[in-house]
Length: 107
Image (cartoon, rainbow, N blue to C red; front, side, top):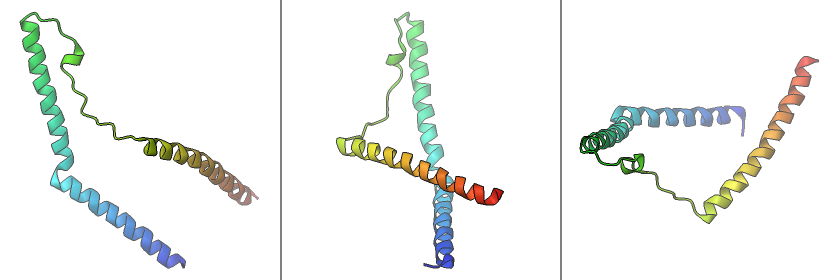
């Protein structure tokens, strides 16, 4: 591949990422999710205040819900370990390349 094709693909990818981000922002998807979190929080606050007025024993666990789901499996855990190890080696390699390039620039 020549440099023009590589640049063309990079710009197309960046443009696609921009368009996706723009559509997400315009449709209000992010704000909708934030609003749902706020609504749940407001409902929990009202329940907390009512329980305090009634003199009930209150703990934070009664008013918070964990909405995060754990989708990890042995496959994803193993893949994450491999990716972390590859990342370490790539980081060292890239730092070495830039160190060599830096030496050329300094001379």
